Image (cartoon, rainbow, N blue to C red):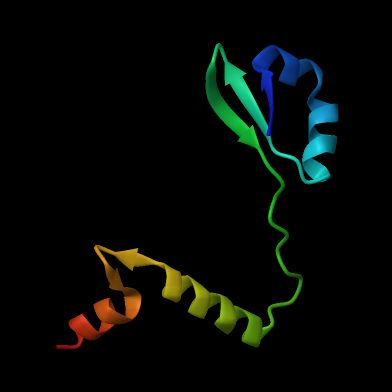
Length: 80
């Protein structure tokens, strides 16, 4: 990840955006602290494929946990 100061970012924003568009991330620093990160955006699909949406929801629910409980465990707990 490339790092630049705020002053550099102001003067070279076009160059930095070109780098981000090419897939690179850029951290912007104030003194020595990171205050922002420029990163490639996520392209939104132009059409919503129901199978892709369902697959993404399954992936999200499989990987997210709250206090060690899966979303399915939480739903089932609410049904009792």
